[in-house]
Each structure stands twice: as structure tokens, then as C-alpha cells.
Image (tube, rainbow, N blue to C red; front, side, top):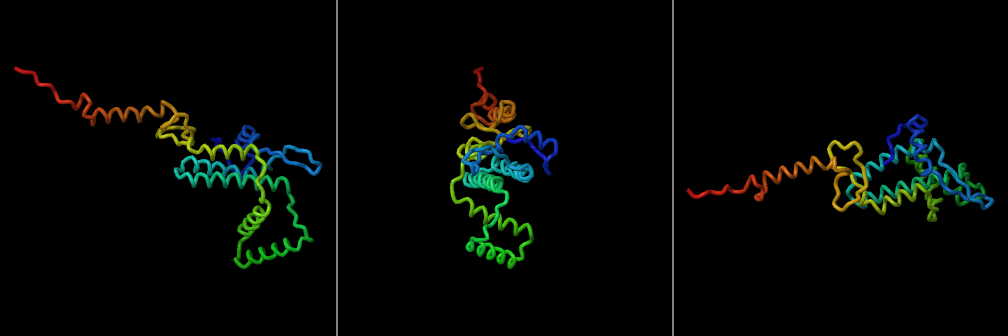
Length: 215
């Protein structure tokens, strides 16, 4: 589980966090010369994305519904690839000779204005449309996408520790039926179960009828 970070970006703990997980946020991109090079997601975008990533992972780890888990994980992958597209194409300029694209853009602008969108709503509206236009193919796998996809196909291993005082409750299950991240966290529940057995079970020495000896 990623360590807690702060927002806005460029604070010391964000920088430490980014140094630790730097490799996840790089990707390979093919240049116009046909050569592959390693690029990074701009830090200002990571500063906006990582708090959302942290909140999503907390929600995913606590979610019991498999479909909802899959949806959140897919959205993380999708949003990250949109950032890659913008890192590869920072200008995203519209070709003025592409009449179809220009007409579509004007139509979207008219829709946004008729709805009286504020600037933030308008930006999200256009970003969603641009992402849908750009993501018409299965994108190349990057480290972040591979990590999130692994979580998606192994989401049954993602558990929240049942220990009431656990300091790091998000963990991966390593044994079938496991509910606690460590024996220390499991001890209170184990003691409680033993006490319940002692008080309630007919096989408990406490509840067995006392033998009567003949006089």
C-alpha cells in the first residue's frame, strides 16, 4: 500500500514517496525516429493523480463487491493511460484542416455552453471526449498498468486486517481463510473465541455436568 502523501505536490514527503515509487510512473514511448525512450508523467499531474490513487486503493481494499473492485481498478488504469497520452502529446493541437474534427469540437462547445458548464466542468467534458477519441486501441503495458492489472486479477488476496488496533491494516492474504495480517493481530480474536467456547460449549469443562459419587 502506498505511503500517505500530502497535497499539493513538491512537499518533502511527496518527494520521498516519489523517489521510492519512481519506477512505477515511467513508461516507454516511441519517437518519430522509431527509437524507444523512457518518459515520466509530469510531477504536477502526479501531484493531482496520486491522492486520488491513494483514496481509490483504500476504497478498493475495503470493497467486498468484486464488480465494484474491478470498476475502480479499471478506472485507475484508464486514467493513467490518459495521462500517458497527454505526456506523449503535450499540445494535443487540433488540425484545422480536419473539418470533421473541427465541426465536432464546435458541437461540443455548443453543448457545454447550453448546459452552462463552469470552466472545470467544461474541461472535464472535453478531456473525456479527447480521451475517448485517442484511446481506440489497447495501449502498451507500462509498470503502473501492470501493477494495477495484477491487483485486478488477484483482488481476492486484498484484505483489510480485522485487528481493531492494526497500524497497517491493508495486506495480501497468503493463506486460505486468513483474516488477520499477523499472529499479533489475530491473538485478541483467538482469545475471545476460546473464552466463548469455554463459556458456551457443552464440551467445555466448565459446562460438563459434575459427576456424582455414590455414598
